[in-house]
Image 1 (cartoon, rainbow, N blue to C red):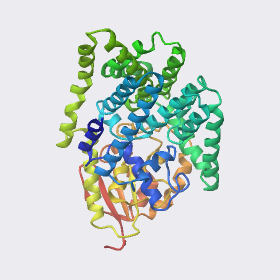
Image 2 (image 1 turned 90 degrees about the vertical axis):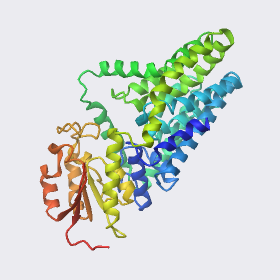
Image 3 (image 1 turned 120 degrees about the vertical axis):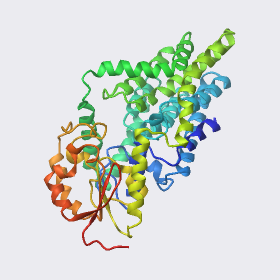
Image 4 (image 1 turned 45 degrees about the horizontal axis):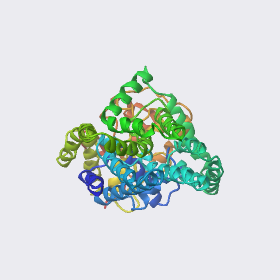
Amino acid sequence: MVALASLRICFADVLWSDEDYHLAAAINILHGKIPYRDFWYDKPPLAALYYLAIGAAPGILLRLWDAAYILLCCFLGFRLSRSLWSEDEGLWTALLIAFFTTFYLPSAAIPFAPDALLIAPHLAAIYFVQRGKPLVAGLFCGLGFWINVKALFVLAACVFWGWSAVLSFGAVVAVGVAGLVVSGSLLDYWYQVWAWGLSYASGSTVAHPWLLALERIGRWLGFHLALALAWVNGVSGQSDRWKLVTWLAFSFAAVCFGNHFAPRYFLQLLPPLTVVGAHGIVLALRRWRWAVPVLALLLLVPLLRFGPRYLLMATHAPWADIAMDLDSQAVAARINAMKRPGDTLFVWGYRPDIYVFTRLSPPGQIWDSQPLTGVPADRHLTAQEPSVTRQTEENWSQAPLLLQPVFFVDGLGPMNEKLSPERFEKMRRLLSNYREIGRTRLSIIYRRLGAPTS
């Protein structure tokens, strides 16, 4: 398990989409800013605090930190399965968690976005509720809520084991809301996390979302068939199988939430599938001789498909995510050679890794183009029509603050000319006060006229 979790060190010199966003948020906090009020952050706060714990550092420290979190999930899975069945199931659960958080799409398994960070409180909540401690389970559901709002689906599953989990969940949520009120960021939190998030979810450009669902569910099952079959075997004959079925049903509902079916959303299924699946594997190994070769064959599918990618990563395989991150590193190198203490940066487009590699922060609340254009990051490389229009005009009121940054990076125009900053009047006026100081393949770097040099 330690070896599997540590394989992510192969990705130590690049950042992946989603994790760079939360790292950049943590850097804003290190600059003394409060989420939502002082900088835009459309995710719950604990996702940023996870990275703040290591000083928002990329590299090997980040990968070791993620590996430690995987091992924590393995431990929680072990305790849960052992309490339900035996130590054999516990060991299999831990192994399955380590395996399937390693051998799946790198963009889903490697970055620790809120979907991955929810695994630990998810497992802890189910562990305590099935141990007859629903109030403790509710505390972990509340903790999970401030990581990922899909913790509501975990709470729904817990209610079938012990309804009083709702009480402690509400207490944790109330404490968090009180903190937002005291920091003066409650309204900004509501708009950025909930209003923007729901508008994004409802603004999907997929013509046939359920066809997409069938396609992605089929692909996911193809790589996780061992888990699916083991779960079916594990749940059969259980006296409380209705609870286990309900747990899986709510987890699947969380995957479907928003109709996007992104690969990382399927991480919500890992806790119920690995825990119950471990029991199914133990039963199969005890009953049937042919269970060993069948299990080995099914696990070879994801191993052979995704195992070589760790070797490819060490040589910087020509993948789009890696190419963009390497381009961001080149941009940051140019800025780092010129920056001075107190300098600020604004990046047009969704390129939070540039903030991570420069350790700079924006001068105002808005720090990428999404809240201004209404075109979310998952479609702004090809689209130009906004799918989120609510409050974008108000967000443009932040534009005068954009006159303050020392550095301005256009990280979107070279890839989608239709959304280049020159297409927007306020951005054109802004750029008239800047001069170009360099280009990379995917970015244009500007520096404010008259800004002091290092």
